[in-house]
Length: 304
Image 1 (cartoon, rainbow, N blue to C red):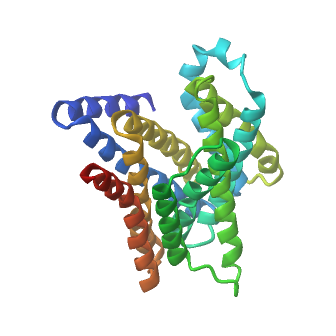
Image 2 (cartoon, rainbow, N blue to C red):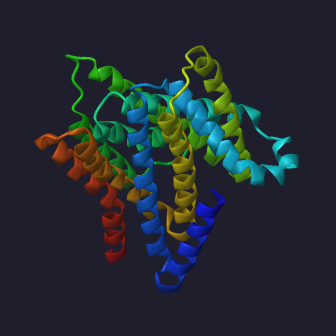
């Protein structure tokens, strides 16, 4: 893992010499989103033979191993957490987001699961308005609504079969992720990044431990490799994503994450023979358009 990060640092240094920082951020965000979609692909492959709680447990253990060097130099801070009620709420949200996200991606087309994940934006706006009294401007409302319409066109939930159940789990995972995001926003001024990452790694892992033990089946060597891949790739993707936000504007990088839907369509077609229909293609276009709306509104304000 350390060698991977070292190569990443060398690559970053090379980029800094020839590419402006905002463009570096966009490029890194494109890599991060591709890696997160690839994690979903691996989870889907594993879910045929390995329990989802077990996948989640191994992911958290690998993530915790990656954090050990930072934990070793931050023990004093870790032992003195603040605002425990927000930590508990964030951990619950993160657990729901990860487990329900795994459940969704394992049972419906990859693009559908990815599209449902985008509803996190809607939930963040609602929770921020209700819990933090943040103002959601008309431009933001339009962006969220257009994006949600695109999601529905891609997913096209039907109540005639069991797919609607996994549409609900996808929405539940997005809600959990939104709760975690809002909690991080509330704690970002009082808690360090290592505290937030470590608490999530440890306690989400503990929540997955009991059901994992109850349903435990020893993976094959191949499955162990895939399980380790989920943890390592997730960790690398998160590190690259954080770096992207440092280099580029937050609203730009956040909109780049909509590229996940493109990756999902490619991987879904290539690996699982999932062919989107015409309405789904329209939905993808609408989602991408919603990602571009903030730039359209910004250009309009500058002209005025």
